[in-house]
Amino acid sequence: MIDIRKVFRSFRFAGQGILDLFRFENNAKVHLLVAGVVVIAGFALSLSRIEWAIIITQIGLVWAAEAFNTAIEKLCDFVSHGLHPQIKAIKDLSSGAVLILTITAVLAGLIIIGSHLLAIFF
Ligand SMILES: Nc1ncnc2c1ncn2[C@@H]1O[C@H](COP(=O)(O)OP(=O)(O)OP(=O)(O)O)[C@@H](O)[C@H]1O
View 1 (cartoon, rainbow, N blue to C red):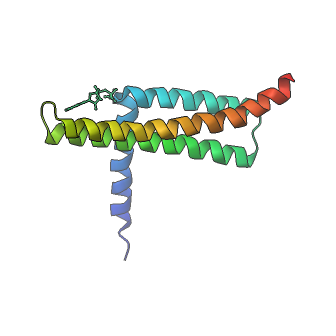
View 2 (view 1 turned 45 degrees about the vertical axis):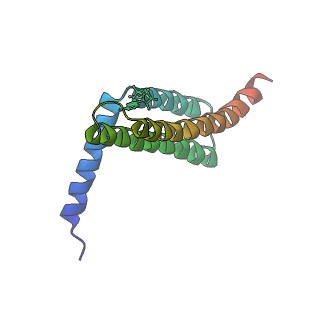
């Protein structure tokens, strides 16, 4: 039997994590701002359903990667005080993952938004 109250409780904790991410993490604030600009541009350019699906997926991937990266950084700082080369390697790999998804999101955004802008101006 599924315990619905437990499911809602888990949603509440996850929601708190998302709120903390955008309240306290500088990079997440940047991702939030950029996503807001892209969504406004998307409405202005009347994107198709497929284009919206791609844009939303890209935004979700970058936000989720940022959340994982923040969690890994916090875990590193909790288990290791002071500098350690392994911690550096772990943190750099984790932020590298965010960068990979950010680059692919920017490219997808440029292809979609850029093609609409080209159609308007040329
Ligand atoms: N405990 C540590 N031991 C070794 N290197 C570390 C440690 N903490 C951070 N570093 C490294 O120092 C550099 C700067 O890390 P820092 O977390 O300050 O900046 P950042 O990557 O921009 O992260 P943030 O998301 O916090 O802005 C990175 O290469 C990181 O891997």
